[in-house]
Image (cartoon, rainbow, N blue to C red; front, side):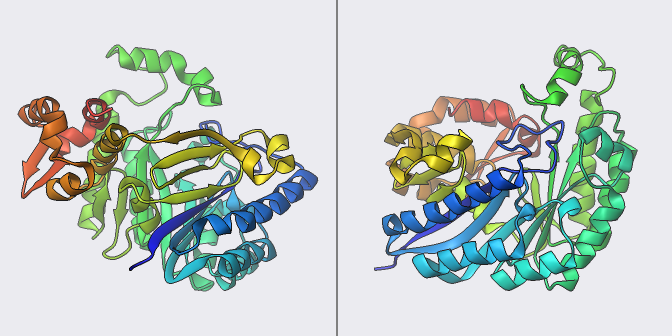
Length: 386
């Protein structure tokens, strides 16, 4: 019998400075606190291994925060724990998020030596004015240096994040960034629109603009709806013409370079999260770690878990619909029926019919998928399955 597959997520919550738009669980911290957290993280990963015997780890993702604040030795120790305690697949995808302002050639070589085989570089823009507005600690030239150093260190699988819809950004500005980026030929590009979340510096700064845009009025500082849509369409066309396949709403890859770790989430695979606030979902049971740093450092393994929940079949079906529709290829109806006890129409027929009639969903070749028009209003489509 084939062993079950598992993905691991490892959270590094620290950053040099929190970006103005960021709502992730991250914050600056002094070195002593970072070291205590690191020791607790190593212990948590090692102690949890017994819960996942017989499972093959197919991907690992170091996320944050800024995981590239880890030294090479720290990363090597974490990877040694995983290799020693878990069954790590020989072809596992092992990704690390990197901020261009926190890496150099020696650190990147150390990451490669530790087993990291995929980098995700948070570029966000190739325009210094936009980077300053975002509160990033790097500038355009820092990104080029980091990218070149990553290639020289032997990384042949690199993702770069690029944002659109930024304050003051015009379609021509975004086009310049995206064309500069594809000139470097990263294997994967995550191209997504800025979302301004409550509780961020950007929310305080641009909330009035959001209200104007929501009413259909022209915002003062943010791009209007038409400009946002223009950037989305233009980016999609440029990336496709450059050989990048859109395989998920905001993700594009050269053939064979799709992110395997993220696919686990979208296809409802099992994943175990380690570190502050990290989420897990294994055997249809979901939980998250405490997001209190003092509690995390001092607590035992059993005391870390919060919001533990066994998902009902109805909840599983719901997730399968709105997560599966993130993928451009959509949801295979036969596979869905085998896993969740019936064709999607048996549970959501009225809503599916409505979305098909509105031209937002397509039912073709045994699959349900978002149309191009549906991708523009994906949240609306997904809402009918929640």
